[in-house]
Amino acid sequence: MARVKRLYEGGQWEELLRVAPAGADLSADLDFYRGLALAKLERWPEARIAFAAGARKAPRDPRFPVELAGVAYKQKDFRAAERELRRALRLDPHDSYALNFLATIFFLRGNLEAALEYWNRAGLPRVNQVRARPEPDLKPELFDRAFAFSPLSTLELSQFETAQAQLDNLGIFSFYRWELVPSENTAADSRSVPPTAAFDVTFDSIEREGFGANKSIAALSMLRGLPYETIYPDYDNAFHSAVNFSSLFRFDSERLRAFAEVSAPAAGRPCWRVRAWVDGREENWNIGGTFFGSSIPITDLKLRRIETGAEFRSIQSGRWDWGTGVRFARRSFDRFSGLEATAIPFFTDGNSLELFGHTRYLLVSVPQERITIDSSASAGFGRFYAAPLGNYARAAGSLRFDWLPAGQGDDYEVSSRLRAGGTLGPVPFDELNTLGVEQDDNDLWLHGISALRDGRKGHSPMGRDYALWNSEMDKVVYQGTFFKVRLGPLFDAGRIWDPSGLFGSRGWLWDPGAQVKVRLLDTVEVVLSYGRDIRSGQNTFFGTTEK
Image 1: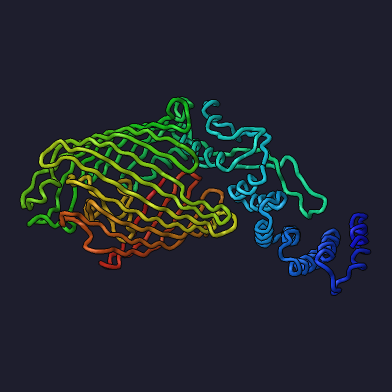
Image 2 (image 1 turned 180 degrees about the vertical axis):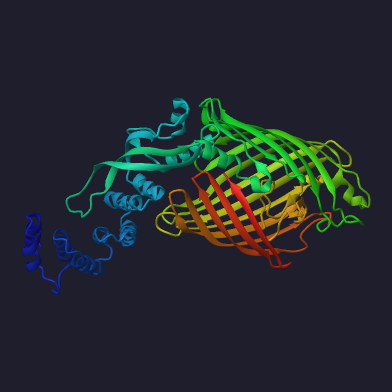
């Protein structure tokens, strides 16, 4: 053994292999040095055999999986390298070299969150410089405050997550990515691979500015809703302060709507945001097939409603945020006859005032597997100022599961979301929940049921209480310079009911389907979907656009 060590330290690797030949009854230590010599000679398959032989003889020795990882790395087999390094860390959780090496593997595969998780366990990585490319057209002090980390410090995963949440909260970046350029390497003499430990961090982004970066993008954003007789005049980053104005004008004669909202950071802090809005509607409804409280089918219900409100949102960290607000609404309905006595409160004119709050918390994050489970909850308490209505309360919650199965990139994406909500106390018709696909006015989607019938709302089931499950899988089938195309199956299941018995789905609804998503210029996404409602046999083709 002493002779083998001298030969290795002297660089006499061929002589070492003659002294410790393959097939001999070698100790685990001799297998280890034989593997090191073969690695120095870049005879990777033989090195792997030598290290594997030593690992069988000394299964509790972490040196062997580390070196097997080095061989796999040299052979560009990152998955095998990751597997061996995880095995090494189970044997020695504090091995800084293995932690650094595994972090580097994840970094090279584009999984920065997983890389930071392992680097942080070793007190790494160090950030030398932080810069933006291009420099955003945003006040420097506001942009700098969005970053929860700084140069000449260790980049913590929690700081990185918080920075991303605060940048998202500014609402002016349609796309961004992080580029980490190695600025120095560290290595140990007996190790096969020198992992990277320090970086220059570059924030590379596409910023929304004014009506759009150019006339084409501005027109694409504003006119994306023309198939629904809707336009979206938006103006972003006013006064270089992340003050954003968004609006919606729908000129469909059956569903007139005008909406405007302004939002801005509060007190110059990117972790706080306030918004205020006004929303006016005049809509014709056909609820002849979804309302069971009238002797005569109601096919021409007119709803007029105006709402105004304000909200404050706070980013506590990359995993937790909360918000609270108030809204005031006034509604009126056209008078009609034939209602049951228990149905009258649903069509009561009058005003309402509600205080509401919401929170989001990231329950589970497994960056190595690219899995997250997000949770959210909301609640509201209000009063209607018109008899026979009075006080009411509502609550809702959701769990969302997201998974990127591929080791890198977003070629595949699987997501599933479970939501449930309920309302206590009588509420007017316009405060009911709706299950069905509809542009802008509803997010409780069942892809097999359209919320519209002959252009009028009311075709999908409504009620105060609901449970909904949406799941989908996407595969990138084309990615070019100007657009990306995703394709995949989906499945929805839901039920909605009302204590009055006058609304509801009369059982569970099951809707399989498929969808195509086309992302244009990282500005607008067009979603085309097909869903089939198994219970009724109804087929629904639907298209929508998202910014």
